Length: 163
Image (cartoon, rainbow, N blue to C red; front, side, top):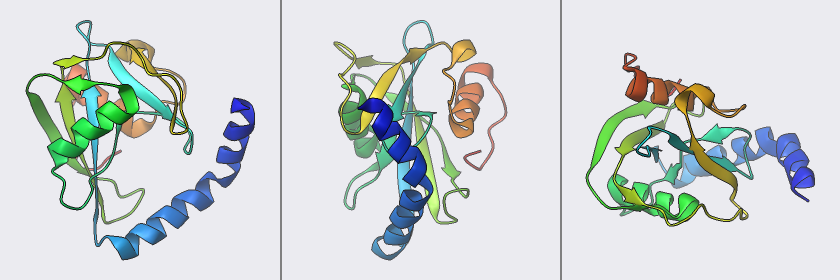
């Protein structure tokens, strides 16, 4: 079943992406998303694989109307990774995600203090997740994800665009 879903997603991903961004163009003047670089004590990073797009990503999603970026980040971590933030977080930066849309921006947070009792079971949205060493990221980890990890863990210069 997972293979069939993966094939369908790959086949229709470009169309789905265009549809959602066309829809968001009318619903929102500008889109704002959040992502989190969640690091365990060994500096392994938590990544998720979605059912509706290819690749491995930092957990996150859209900021809802009336929601703070910090609140959206905490909500998305709970939904995608069963992660509860227990301490302070740091804003790494806000990036223009121009390969998606000239109106899309992503705020990236660094999370080191959290609680996660166990990895969540696969579901309709997140089909796989886990912690990975920066030197051993899974195949298909997106360029934007790799860039943010390198900025944070390797001290690479920050760039203003997502990738």
